[in-house]
Length: 222
Image (cartoon, rainbow, N blue to C red):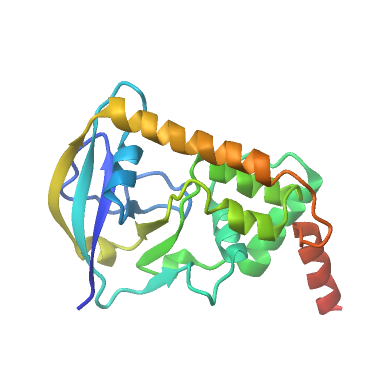
């Protein structure tokens, strides 16, 4: 029986997460978003500079659950992008980005509602910016893949179904000092942005951009 210890950062202690609650426009839609890193959970609990939070610790029994692991080699970052642009709310301000969004959803979207748990990247503020740059044909797929590793956010584990919620057991809750972890969260995000601006702003002719990918797909269909 496979079990994992996971954490959820919040402004409250949450002993029993409620299925169906939350925001439907998060990275993977409606769900309970967790991490295997207690330190990251503490950062995520620090939603502003004034409010202390909590790192809630759980045990998740994965036995019998349908798991979509987007970090598995059989999936590409395009699958993750398709899910992200399907759920996240953002302004698409260029013709290429509008076309790219529709293309990704049509070709690479995976229906997360068919799974109990989704494992994949977390699109924090700076990371969401990287994804938008890819849609706008500003960075290549190679650079997007590298950029998603900046800041070392790791993977997030998202409980999607009621069955997954029932497989979750609360263990304990640890108080988070916002003065410490809000600064850590801000520093992590700032460093990721600086590293990105320094290393990923140039246009590489030998790399593949979303426009190239769409053209290749069109040729294949012909």
